[in-house]
Length: 235
Image 1 (cartoon, rainbow, N blue to C red):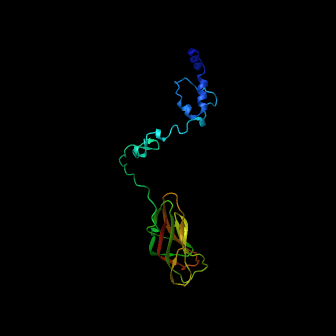
Image 2 (cartoon, helix red, strand yellow; image 1 turned 180 degrees about the horizontal axis):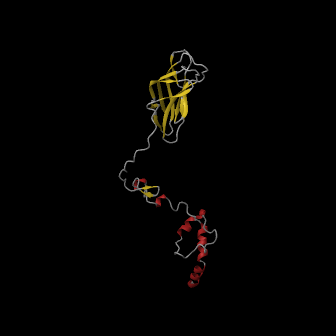
Image 3 (tube, helix red, strand yellow; image 1 turned 90 degrees about the vertical axis):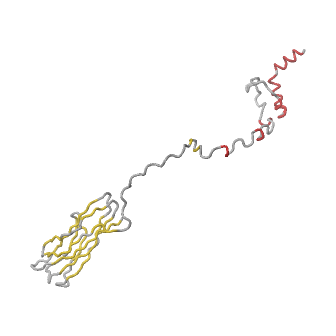
């Protein structure tokens, strides 16, 4: 008889386990099964559910209090998953950067003519300048301004457009008109402001000047003196 009971229990072990599970948390929690004796395939579908497990069977009390805290880690040892090594020595100083444009407007060149030259009728007469070269740096706007002194002839027949023309690299850039009055008088005339647009690279320039006299009779000469030009750099 005892042998039949033992055989019966062995043959229905899975069913008894399911029965204990269905009865509630305390009964299920009391069962101790041999490792591997019951597999997931052997359990009846739905025999063990979340609601049948003993509530709070594993709580925070089962974990050693404060076993892992912020104080357990050394500050800065892990950064984005990478171990940070000791701080290295400072690197070598870099070389100088490119030259910047001057701060504020400045004078880049001062072309001058301090003598005097006679400009006869019907001709273009060169007016020699000193200090008439400079280099325009990248992204710099250059303006040309100044004035000239001119002695007017006693008469100018058929005149139109008498002027001192300023050329930059051979291209007319600005001018100062020479009036025909007062006759035999001397006046100082300003140049219209000339403009050199911004350059993308360093560009050397040369400025020259010539006076055009449109009078048609002999003796109708202008005299040009004291020419002053300023090249103004605007960064």
